[in-house]
Image (cartoon, rainbow, N blue to C red):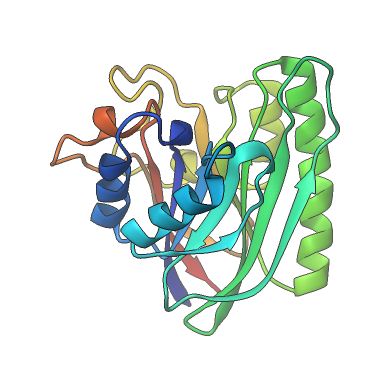
Length: 231
């Protein structure tokens, strides 16, 4: 089994303290980071590159649209990448799915990042679309899937429940560290998740310690760290 540390993080377009974001990421020494709300307006390419460099990582997947990216450590090899726009809804932000097919320690992983809608109906519909995209990616690349992101819904909601039926809910199965991810300053809700195929062993998942006090400085979400073992 190959060990992988995967971090999920909504960074609010780096509108708060980009240096604190980088410090949070580096403090957790991830192999893979699934990022939501990466910059997508003026100078977005440069901002993303600077972020990846400051974190000691590189960009493995993501486009300008929808503010999604997957970052990977230098020792993690990118095999392929995909990006899928989800069906639009008038008056709502466009949603998407960023996928990086990665190899670490001789094992392959499909790491996917998404950010779901605040509206109930579009959120649930998009989960169905995401599951179909991930099924096809799994068949194409012959690797297990880990989906991470900002669900904008708490456990027990219809979209979260559908994800938990198809995948392991990381924190529910192997709680370690904090549970609540939003807001960073006063966390009261668990709306960020890491969901993994049954073939992936999750040994720990939760909000990591914040010894430096950077979580409330960096963004409005707390990060979510998962310790994974890949077949």
